Image (cartoon, rainbow, N blue to C red; front, top):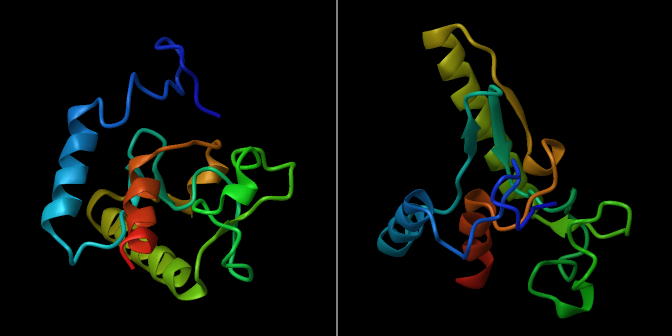
Length: 140
């Protein structure tokens, strides 16, 4: 989970869009309707992360999603039976795109990045990749 402690490695920030980088991504998404998804590149750990970061994903129950208040209090704790909805086609596209990026990095730099859902690094909330992807649902 995230932390309110600014000294923590999982500090959630002082407020939404507090950092210039996140404001830039918000602006990019606001100005470019054709951008639907983001993949998070963690160069230090050589990871390519795709949504979701708060919980494991599932593709069978579209009602189990971040917009449904019936699941408030369950997100972010993988032991409570909540799994965030992602359509199979979206997940397949995200994985395929991440694998393409991985292969491109390997061909240029010789480093082999690992592709995995963000939650497998550690559970997070409010990440820019999840924010960007969630807009796909909100704007639909």
